[in-house]
Length: 225
Image (cartoon, rainbow, N blue to C red; front, side, top):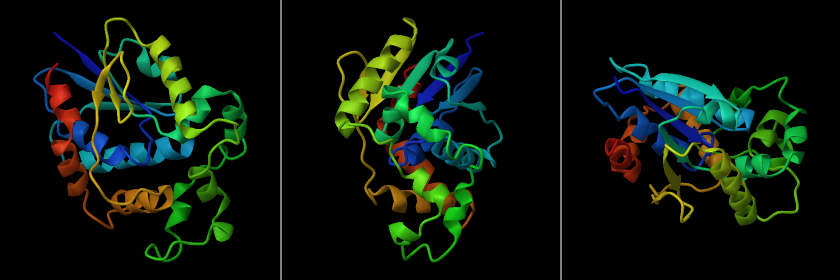
């Protein structure tokens, strides 16, 4: 029997994770299906994993879900690969400097510190907790966002198996299916992170995530399998 395994590289990308996870939650094939969420940014992958758990919690038939920071672990044997890298994760893939940057706060990941205060009045940058600053921070590398994403994509491309179907989100490439989608809404990382926390903590229903996922080209791409 066919076993479909979808690896999502850059699953913690704050600008895409809601609708990407919504599409995965709305995909119900007639065969066994598992999802591997992968992101080298521990704060963001933790948030994305919790969001996916909330979206799936009331489904009668949900995929098996695992999370990892390892690209090779996520890609091993994957039948389908969705690459949705933002600049935060891309910088961590493009340079080992990013890994050293992570070690400062990996021992105490607590994204829920962001719930402190009034979510409708963003806290000034100088008053953010250490964990919150790290969630929306980037390793201090001499790379533009676009260059970091380009280098990271080449790294990921070299690790993907030859038999995997591959889709890249919102960054045109000539070696994979290109999926472009903009559901609208806020664009800055801090506002996006607050919105995701509202869904994770049941302050707002997660229907919007699934609605965005159904409208996205990713769901149609998954169904082509």
